[in-house]
Amino acid sequence: MPRRVVIVCNALDDETRAERGISTDSPAATRKVFLLCRALRTSGVRALVLSLGRGRADGSPRYHPARVRRVQGVPVVYVPFSHRRVLSGLLSLVGPVPVVRRIGRYAGSTTFVFYNRTPAFAPALLAASASGCRTVLDLEDGEVADESGSLRSAFYRGARWLYERVCSGGALLACSALAEMTELRPVRCYYGAVEGPGGEPEWTAPDLVVQLGGTVSRDTGAMLLADAIRILRRDMPGWGRRLRFEITGQGDCVPVFEELAREGGAPTVTVRGRTSEAEYRRLLRSAHVGLALKPASGNLATTTFPSKVVELANEGLLVVTTDISDVRRVLGTGAIYLTKETPEFLLDRLQWVAEKPEEAAKVARGGALAVSSQCSLASVSQGLANFLFSASA
Image (cartoon, rainbow, N blue to C red):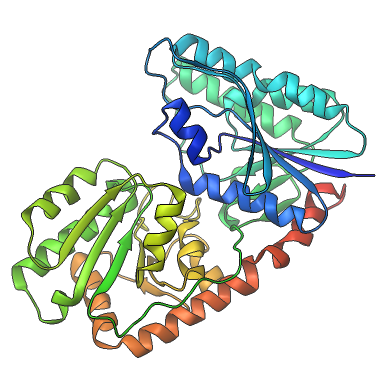
């Protein structure tokens, strides 16, 4: 009998994102979802994505009907999306339900995986459960308690209560600490999956390219890098002239880096903004160092996992990261850890990379090997399949 996994989420491919005029999506979450599907398919599981395909509604009359696409070999069903705010919310609630009911009637064994305890997915969760399908929570982020008593906080508490009682197959966790934030059992950590390893940077190149991407905000440590660049430009050490900074993504600190780019001088700063998947891959392959700077003192430092470290290491970049969550468990000695979250210490580590490229390359290779052994499609596929379909897991 066929085995089938349906990921209920808001993943968006570049073409659909452009068609629907969406700029508030999460590229990292989308990559993780599609690679999960591809990993499962290597074990013979039929994996597909059921996506809301939505972003922030702008109030215009634009409407986008349901659409089926194949993305990276994975079938994706996008439910309708409207830019009228009230209609947008209603479509998100009811749009997935007919698809869930139809899939639930297919022959074989079907598991529905729900991305976070998202209130919009609640009707689809109930429909999947009523169809007798196994339901699993994919818990990606810890939740900061909201005791405000507002209607919104009550809505989210209700959604959490529902997921905790309806999900029959346990929870996939982004990191081990999240086990304390759900009563669901069994649980399994899933840090992401990677395809074959990328290339290796040319460490003897004249420029040393340092990449910061994703959500470029104060909450993710972007100001740590901005302050470090200002110090470099003020003091102008010889090794610093070799550095070149590439900023991708979006967030409240993008204007800070745009100002640094306009000021000019060494080291150079280039702000790419939100890029396509293909452009992002091209930029990674031209870089040497990848930064993951989410502060260890932040609210979610232990209960979220910066999945970017997996893709950066897989592309051969040297990962310079704060020591949070399960990063050390995944990368081991294959990364440079910031034990002090100050711009001066970040510069100290970058100086080491600039002055000792052979040693930096060795650490980067260790990170690539660690990711390949733990996160390759082949290494994660069977364990994930067993978890998603085994009643005892």
